[in-house]
Length: 368
Image 1 (tube, rainbow, N blue to C red):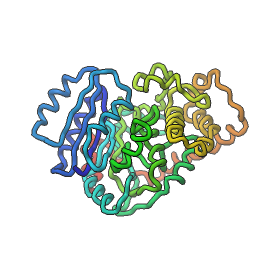
Image 2 (image 1 turned 30 degrees about the vertical axis):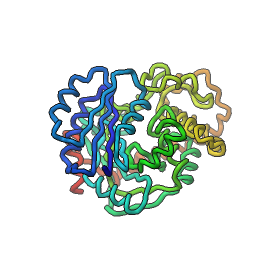
Image 3 (image 1 turned 90 degrees about the horizontal axis):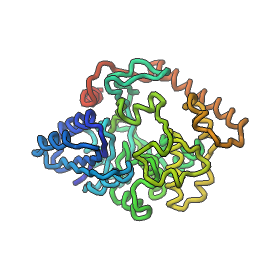
Image 4 (image 1 turned 120 degrees about the horizontal axis):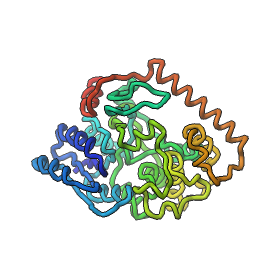
């Protein structure tokens, strides 16, 4: 088997079934398998759905009834897959039909990890934040050129991320929304006893990859489409509602609160969970040099800009030592945000509205 597409999921059948149907519309033959790793509270609907798909021999459904963290469920998904290469997507994401050709190209050129430009699909009923409008059933993209790519050094990508407080995956290689050679993943597992050595699987794995490979390939055209639905973390992130007490986030590993780094505000938000995951992954690989490079002031400034309404809760009982520096960084981050806002409205980011589901978004993207 060349490629495994893994989909860890929990209680999100409304998007999962559509995504699976979309994948099954491709010509799977013997090159690709789909692994759904389900940890839902009640999987009766899934049993019925997958029973109707029994003629698809490369579709594999696994269910665990025990209470698992997102890390444990994601580990199970990788371990239950068999492909030479693995691609991790969410249950509201999509892959393009070119994914097999891209994976074959990776193998021919000995690339251990690949990442692609990602358009965004906003599922119906996805609400907008105050910087966006018309996001329900919308496909947003920039023009791309098929065949264009670049090689990115992982050390440079890691330094870029750490200098920005590890708040974004951005330039990092990743299994989530990426493709990674299994031997590379096994190197991580051998060292960490998990493919995701941190509380957030996407960032934890991304940082771990920088510790086992020197470079990866970034293709400047879509292989993955990032889906944002009302029930996903990505959808919550659009509305800046990605926030809660650590103890209240049930999908986190059980020791997350106990082992939380004191330099990171102890509250679950996008930037804090990413920074914490970066720290934990670097600690597993004992990379003390990289740990010293984390710009915590940037992390605090980023939170103050993007979680403005909740900062009194996030920073409760948390001491900030460099308020003047953080104010400067806040201005830089806000200015960058404004530039992105302008870019999104000057025609460089295009959108197509009225798209009923992500399968339709894939069909449209395939024709662009």
